[in-house]
Image (tube, rainbow, N blue to C red; front, side, top):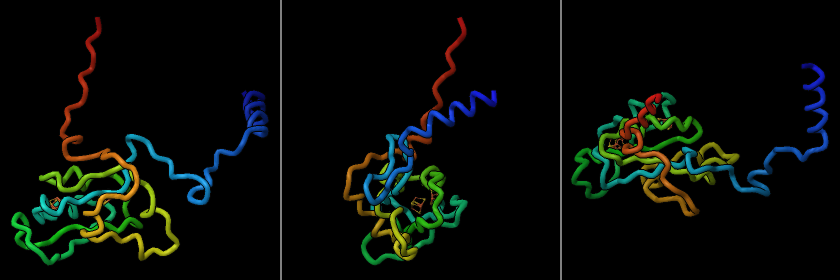
Length: 153
Ligand code: SF4
Ligand code: SF4
Protein backbone atom coordinates (compact mmCIF):
# COMPACT_ATOMS: atom_id res chain seq x y z
CA UNK A 1 0.00 0.00 0.00
CA UNK A 2 2.77 2.43 0.97
CA UNK A 3 4.76 1.41 -2.10
CA UNK A 4 1.81 2.00 -4.42
CA UNK A 5 1.30 5.47 -2.90
CA UNK A 6 4.98 6.28 -3.47
CA UNK A 7 4.81 5.01 -7.06
CA UNK A 8 1.69 7.09 -7.68
CA UNK A 9 3.40 10.20 -6.32
CA UNK A 10 6.49 9.44 -8.44
CA UNK A 11 4.32 9.23 -11.55
CA UNK A 12 2.94 12.72 -10.93
CA UNK A 13 6.45 14.17 -10.67
CA UNK A 14 6.56 14.06 -14.47
CA UNK A 15 3.10 15.50 -15.12
CA UNK A 16 2.21 19.13 -15.59
CA UNK A 17 0.79 20.88 -12.50
CA UNK A 18 -3.01 21.11 -12.24
CA UNK A 19 -2.86 24.71 -11.02
CA UNK A 20 -4.90 26.95 -13.29
CA UNK A 21 -3.32 30.32 -14.06
CA UNK A 22 -6.65 32.05 -13.50
CA UNK A 23 -7.28 34.91 -14.17
CA UNK A 24 -3.92 35.64 -15.78
CA UNK A 25 -3.88 33.01 -18.53
CA UNK A 26 -7.05 30.96 -18.28
CA UNK A 27 -10.77 31.44 -17.86
CA UNK A 28 -12.46 30.48 -14.63
CA UNK A 29 -13.48 26.85 -14.32
CA UNK A 30 -17.19 26.50 -14.81
CA UNK A 31 -19.64 23.73 -15.64
CA UNK A 32 -23.30 23.48 -16.62
CA UNK A 33 -24.11 23.05 -12.91
CA UNK A 34 -21.87 25.72 -11.38
CA UNK A 35 -23.67 28.15 -9.08
CA UNK A 36 -22.18 31.59 -9.47
CA UNK A 37 -23.37 35.11 -10.34
CA UNK A 38 -27.04 35.81 -9.60
CA UNK A 39 -29.52 37.67 -11.78
CA UNK A 40 -32.29 39.66 -10.10
CA UNK A 41 -35.51 40.34 -12.05
CA UNK A 42 -36.62 43.70 -10.64
CA UNK A 43 -40.05 43.42 -12.27
CA UNK A 44 -40.79 40.16 -10.41
CA UNK A 45 -39.40 41.02 -6.96
CA UNK A 46 -42.09 41.76 -4.35
CA UNK A 47 -39.65 42.92 -1.65
CA UNK A 48 -40.59 40.14 0.78
CA UNK A 49 -37.01 39.78 2.11
CA UNK A 50 -37.28 35.97 2.16
CA UNK A 51 -33.91 35.78 0.37
CA UNK A 52 -32.30 37.91 3.06
CA UNK A 53 -33.73 35.81 5.89
CA UNK A 54 -32.66 32.59 4.16
CA UNK A 55 -29.05 33.65 3.61
CA UNK A 56 -26.80 31.88 6.13
CA UNK A 57 -23.82 34.09 5.30
CA UNK A 58 -25.49 37.46 5.88
CA UNK A 59 -24.52 38.37 2.34
CA UNK A 60 -27.82 40.02 1.40
CA UNK A 61 -28.80 43.57 2.27
CA UNK A 62 -31.96 45.33 1.08
CA UNK A 63 -31.84 48.58 -0.88
CA UNK A 64 -34.58 51.08 -1.68
CA UNK A 65 -34.78 51.92 -5.37
CA UNK A 66 -36.37 54.84 -7.12
CA UNK A 67 -38.81 54.00 -9.89
CA UNK A 68 -42.12 52.39 -10.64
CA UNK A 69 -42.45 48.84 -9.33
CA UNK A 70 -46.14 47.90 -9.08
CA UNK A 71 -45.39 44.50 -7.48
CA UNK A 72 -43.04 45.97 -4.88
CA UNK A 73 -44.79 48.77 -3.00
CA UNK A 74 -41.92 49.36 -0.55
CA UNK A 75 -39.46 49.35 -3.47
CA UNK A 76 -36.94 47.26 -1.54
CA UNK A 77 -34.69 44.87 -3.42
CA UNK A 78 -31.78 42.61 -2.45
CA UNK A 79 -28.14 43.33 -3.10
CA UNK A 80 -25.44 40.68 -2.61
CA UNK A 81 -21.95 41.02 -1.18
CA UNK A 82 -19.95 38.36 -3.02
CA UNK A 83 -17.15 38.52 -0.48
CA UNK A 84 -19.59 36.79 1.90
CA UNK A 85 -21.66 34.65 -0.49
CA UNK A 86 -21.04 30.91 -0.28
CA UNK A 87 -23.12 30.16 -3.42
CA UNK A 88 -25.40 27.85 -1.46
CA UNK A 89 -28.48 28.89 -3.46
CA UNK A 90 -30.80 29.16 -0.45
CA UNK A 91 -31.85 32.68 -1.47
CA UNK A 92 -33.00 31.28 -4.82
CA UNK A 93 -34.92 28.52 -3.08
CA UNK A 94 -36.60 31.00 -0.72
CA UNK A 95 -37.75 33.44 -3.39
CA UNK A 96 -41.49 32.80 -3.89
CA UNK A 97 -41.70 34.52 -7.27
CA UNK A 98 -38.55 33.31 -9.05
CA UNK A 99 -37.06 36.81 -9.01
CA UNK A 100 -33.58 35.56 -8.15
CA UNK A 101 -31.68 32.97 -10.18
CA UNK A 102 -28.09 31.79 -10.31
CA UNK A 103 -25.95 31.41 -13.40
CA UNK A 104 -22.67 29.64 -14.07
CA UNK A 105 -20.94 32.95 -14.79
CA UNK A 106 -17.80 33.11 -12.65
CA UNK A 107 -15.85 36.11 -13.82
CA UNK A 108 -15.50 39.69 -12.60
CA UNK A 109 -17.34 39.36 -9.29
CA UNK A 110 -14.69 36.86 -8.20
CA UNK A 111 -11.52 38.50 -9.51
CA UNK A 112 -10.56 41.48 -7.43
CA UNK A 113 -8.03 42.81 -4.99
CA UNK A 114 -10.49 45.48 -3.87
CA UNK A 115 -13.15 44.08 -1.53
CA UNK A 116 -15.46 47.03 -2.13
CA UNK A 117 -16.05 45.83 -5.72
CA UNK A 118 -17.66 42.59 -4.54
CA UNK A 119 -20.81 44.39 -3.42
CA UNK A 120 -23.53 44.06 -6.07
CA UNK A 121 -26.49 46.39 -5.70
CA UNK A 122 -29.94 45.36 -7.02
CA UNK A 123 -29.34 47.42 -10.17
CA UNK A 124 -26.04 45.60 -10.79
CA UNK A 125 -27.67 42.21 -10.18
CA UNK A 126 -30.44 43.06 -12.60
CA UNK A 127 -27.97 43.43 -15.48
CA UNK A 128 -27.18 39.99 -16.93
CA UNK A 129 -23.47 39.09 -17.18
CA UNK A 130 -21.75 40.31 -20.31
CA UNK A 131 -20.08 37.00 -21.15
CA UNK A 132 -21.50 33.57 -21.90
CA UNK A 133 -23.61 31.97 -19.20
CA UNK A 134 -26.59 29.74 -18.55
CA UNK A 135 -29.06 29.82 -15.67
CA UNK A 136 -28.11 26.89 -13.45
CA UNK A 137 -30.43 27.39 -10.48
CA UNK A 138 -33.91 28.84 -10.19
CA UNK A 139 -36.96 28.34 -8.00
CA UNK A 140 -38.25 25.86 -10.59
CA UNK A 141 -35.09 23.77 -10.25
CA UNK A 142 -35.65 23.46 -6.50
CA UNK A 143 -39.30 22.55 -6.98
CA UNK A 144 -38.51 19.73 -9.38
CA UNK A 145 -39.21 16.41 -7.62
CA UNK A 146 -36.27 14.04 -7.27
CA UNK A 147 -35.99 11.31 -9.89
CA UNK A 148 -37.81 8.15 -8.76
CA UNK A 149 -35.60 5.31 -7.60
CA UNK A 150 -35.86 2.54 -10.21
CA UNK A 151 -37.64 -0.56 -8.92
CA UNK A 152 -35.60 -3.70 -8.57
CA UNK A 153 -36.66 -6.43 -10.97
S1 SF4 B 1 -26.21 31.91 -2.52
FE1 SF4 B 1 -26.34 31.49 -0.29
S2 SF4 B 1 -24.73 32.73 0.63
FE2 SF4 B 1 -25.04 33.55 -1.44
S3 SF4 B 1 -26.50 35.21 -1.20
FE3 SF4 B 1 -27.70 33.36 -1.65
S4 SF4 B 1 -28.24 32.49 0.36
FE4 SF4 B 1 -26.58 33.98 0.69
S1 SF4 C 1 -35.70 38.49 -4.60
FE1 SF4 C 1 -37.46 37.16 -4.11
S2 SF4 C 1 -37.15 36.60 -1.95
FE2 SF4 C 1 -35.85 38.38 -2.36
S3 SF4 C 1 -37.09 40.14 -1.77
FE3 SF4 C 1 -37.41 39.81 -3.98
S4 SF4 C 1 -39.22 38.48 -4.09
FE4 SF4 C 1 -38.50 38.37 -1.98
